[in-house]
Length: 242
Image (tube, rainbow, N blue to C red; front, top):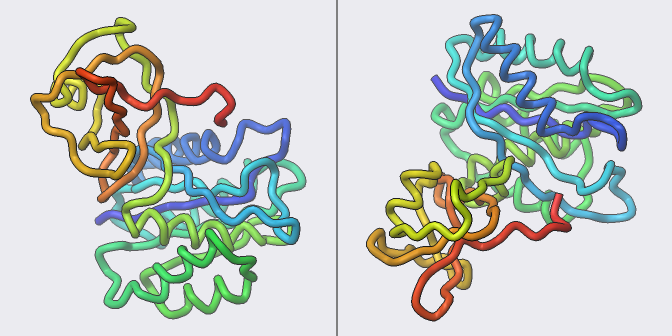
């Protein structure tokens, strides 16, 4: 079966970062024979003076192929307890997307977390609606990371939120491809217009000049493309982005 595994509030300004910690956790899960992780998505949550966060208030989520979700939840919780950064308030969520009967309250919670200051109690109450389908746990400090961990899992479930961790560089800057060739070569599930999200046909011309980042749209790793008069180009990653 598959599960979404999300963590939040695990870092400090000197640590490796929550995304890298999740990648390391996935490597540990695989080494233990408990599951195999996928790409990591970063989900931006509400930034407000009443919300403590390290730099961006974002949760990190991945999909894990597994057989025993309870064992994975225990292992991941122990891993966070031992590897989360000093002074952090880590939270963990494991969610079984294919087992949910009514995901409405969960999806609403995820949307609220992008626009409101939420509480641990709201997170616990939402998770409690899904016994045996959602595991939510605190692993140090105040444990407020459960707020973002549940939100990140819910937003991954939504399928059209967040950025995919990592930068994608052209093999040869300025290489000319069709959109379909670009997607197949660089691992994109689809390419859409940055302006309005509409799909771009596979046979359209494209030039890949600068590094780019993928986003998560319609449950696919997605390239955002910009029209340049006679060809498309992937939206470049801004240097100031983290």
